[in-house]
Image 1 (spheres, rainbow, N blue to C red):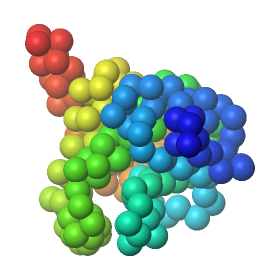
Image 2: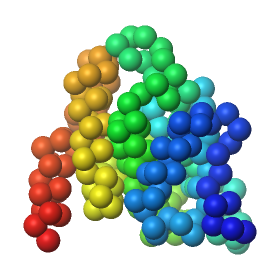
Image 3: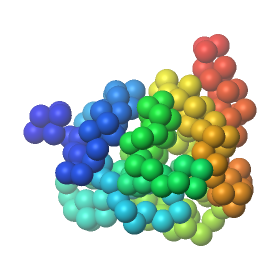
Image 4: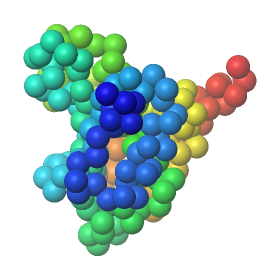
Length: 188
Ligand SMILES: [Zn+2]
């Protein structure tokens, strides 16, 4: 298998999304040897993107593979638009964050992943630490400025509903903390 085969874009992934995904992946050399599949999905509930191990690959003896699901549409100020109409930097930060989740999964065995899955569904503090881990991986891999752009877009430009913003504020790292992480990184 050639290295390019390790990234799979299912048929209906828009070209712009696949290009930006490859750009995001270039920040993560550690992911080069892992199979990551991208798909667009009409039925993701409550989130715009999701990263997960492919369940079947967790049961087998081969190498685990990962799936990133991307919602086909985005609700911008109440109007449904195609996801690939979002600004490039915002998408880069968003996909970079999802790849941060995959970095986090690399170090977990099957049992840890199962516990992780249950924790994510049942515990707020668990979600908070998983989201912090994903952002930390993204910042440490040089995607900090894009993570900030994505956060600014979600928090200040997208016209998200108050309940969604409330959820984001409770569970995700605030931009101020990401800025501190970037500053720390630049010092070293
Ligand atoms: Zn996340």
